Length: 133
Image 1 (cartoon, rainbow, N blue to C red):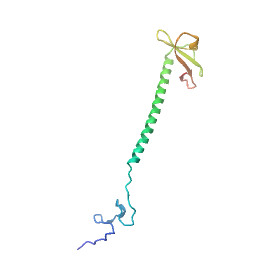
Image 2 (cartoon, helix red, strand yellow):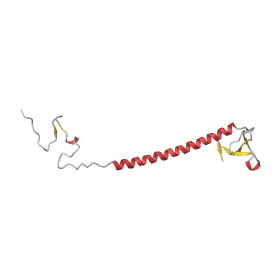
Image 3 (cartoon, one colour):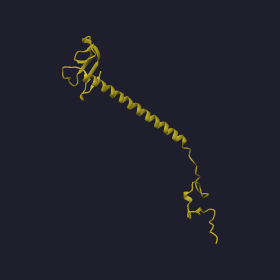
Image 4 (cartoon, one colour):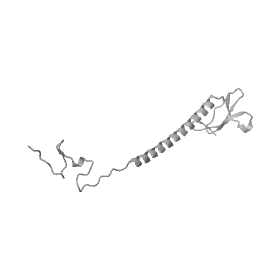
């Protein structure tokens, strides 16, 4: 017995016994559109370049924010470890000094009015966080 031979213009897979013209990666008839492989390397390279710049910019923003936060933390620790005999008022400016024995203290007196070794002037904000002026 001979197997029924299909015409050349019919795409029939003899292994699966199915018509699979739509599954082929190439055109199977004269009227089919030409399949052109698109070069996606340039698009990938542009996309990689864009995402790298975006990630780097975000990293630098986060790094700057982290450094600012750590500096704020260090100032707050320095002030809270210093000596003062009054309750600071929110919204006021205070001045931090260092004595000769390396002990720090907080004062109401500005550096222009005294001869103490000034570390800096600080503002107590509404969140009770000290901000350097």
